[in-house]
Length: 160
Image 1 (tube, rainbow, N blue to C red):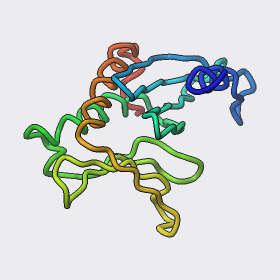
Image 2 (image 1 turned 90 degrees about the vertical axis):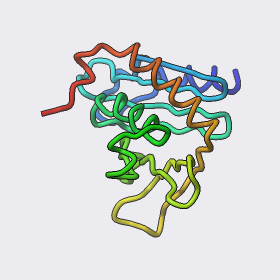
Image 3 (image 1 turned 90 degrees about the horizontal axis):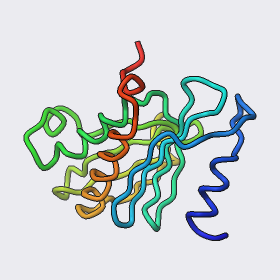
């Protein structure tokens, strides 16, 4: 097996540090070259990962809360509409990659361009910016819409 099929097989059986039962697919969405998969730890509550696969980018991050999924969709929709995101903040933290955070960050120099920022936080020496062009953003919005439709509403409520 090669490519995405191989990664999907590996991801369903990969082991969590806190739970040796692995992960199972909870929700998914795709559009053209982008796919977004949400996996949940089997036998454990409140442990999720998100896989972002854009053909040239494949990233698995730890999510703290599933409420970030509809929030990420709103964040991506905001740049093309008058929305509080567009004026109040240009950054949304999605989750963690190891000890570093993973963020969506609107570019303040080039309109309608967004970055997927990996490793930001305390150590500004180790940081990676991946460019999301307008066509990538449109595909991700469509994929996130499908994920939101797949997820049970009660799981998308913010933690208290």
